[in-house]
Structure formats: C-alpha cells, structure tokens
Length: 302
Image 1 (cartoon, rainbow, N blue to C red):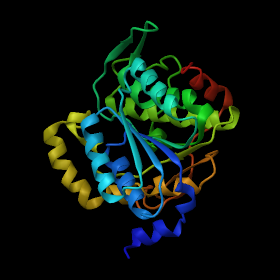
Image 2: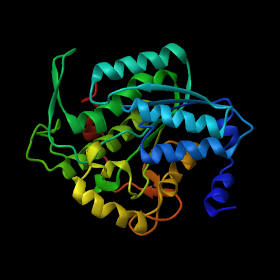
Image 3: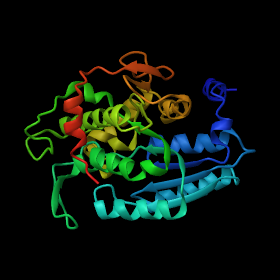
Image 4: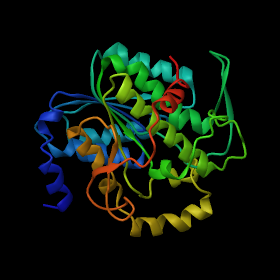
C-alpha cells in the first residue's frame, strides 16, 4: 500500500462519508478533481452524494463519468455556474436548495489567479465589482451566507499569499487598476481568510480553512487566467518535478473532515515554508482585530 493510501485510511473517514451529501465548487479543477476521484475510490462499499458545480460543464460531465466508472454507489449531480455572475450564483443556489434540505460538507475551492483587471456590472442590483474580487472572495462568502441554514460544515481553500499583502481600507473593493494581478489575488485570499474567521467567531459558522501548499494546478493555465502561455510551458514542468502532486497537495481536503472549525490556524503542509509534508494546523500569521474583520464581512450582504 502506498504511503498516501496508508495516511488516508488512517484518517478513518468511512463513518464521515456514509450517506452524506457533499457539495464541491470548482470541482473540475486540478486539486478538487484529484480529491474527488480519490475520495470515491477509498470505500467502494458505501454510498454518498456528490453535488459538483463549476463553470466548465463539459469537464464536469467527464468527471462524473470517471466517478461512475470507479464507484457506482456514488450519486453525482452536476450544475454549471459562473462565480463572476451573481445571477448565476443565485440560480445554482436555488437548484441546490430545491433538491437538498441538508448539506453535510461544502467545499468551496473555485478561484482564479492571474486575471487582468476588469470591472463587471451586476444588472440585478446595479452594482460594480472587480472580477478577481468577485470570484475569489465575494462569490465564496456569498455562497456560504446563502447556504448556512442547510450546511453542517464549510471547507474553504486559502492561499498563504494572504501573509504578504496588506488591506487598503480606502480601496476595499479593489477598484484601483494599478494593483498587480498577483497582489490582487493575495488580497482577495486575505479577505476570504479574515471573513471566514469573523463568521466562525461571531456568526456561529463551522468553517475549516485549508491550504494545499504549492502545486502545478490549472491556476497556472493561461486559458484559466493563469500565466502567459510561454511562461506556463516553461514553469509547469519544473513545478511538477519540485512540488507535490495534486493528490498529495489535496490531503488537507481529506483531513479537514476530522477537524474542528478554524479559529487561529489553517490546515495544510507544515514543512519548508508550508509546501511539503502531511497536513497539520499552521498558526495564522496576522493580527486579528474584530472591528476590522467586521468591515470585511460587511462587504458581502445578502
């Protein structure tokens, strides 16, 4: 038995999965799909339900076929949605709630990395949003707030880039087009971290924060808002040799099922700048001021 398999079976997840309902956003992404395909193969004698949502419905159909080939006991429901469109968010939330009065685990893994600055208008409420802000931060908190009443546990993917950026409270909505795409990404992940902590501490949420370390995910794909094609061709093979595989990078997705909600730590690799090793809780490196956290939370109203 491989070391990863030994580790996964040591988590004793069977009882956590039997007859459960699991929602996963960004399901066709590299990390999420690696997690899903391994999850359905762990225990072939049990059944549970997967609700998979993503922008790319064709990839979701391919993923559903792969799941069915591995384990026919798993019920798989797929929905397309666009995280940069609030109407699309509302539509997928309605579909989920129409068919489910309870969600055991909600994994919110969708996100973009290197998208150019773009302001989008929401025609419903006549508001404007910066695209990376809307996808990486707003849509995730929006989904949590809309699904809280039927959800037992949220599991949110954070990037450690939150450590290297600071919040400009004069430009909370990131309308300044001079912010670099890398910094914009880091700020949205910092918002997501702080808002999740606020919801855990003040609003009775059960949110686990996880991070995968570093791996060559589709975030680096130029067609998905990653680096430019030439750079991507150069860097991705190097990353695949140096950094953990997508499956190993996704181990925190599994361990989170056994964890209590995050208060002052993030679950993820703990060795060499939090890139390698099996997941452990790593202390959050930021000052936590509840008034500042509240300002962040007030950006997403439902």
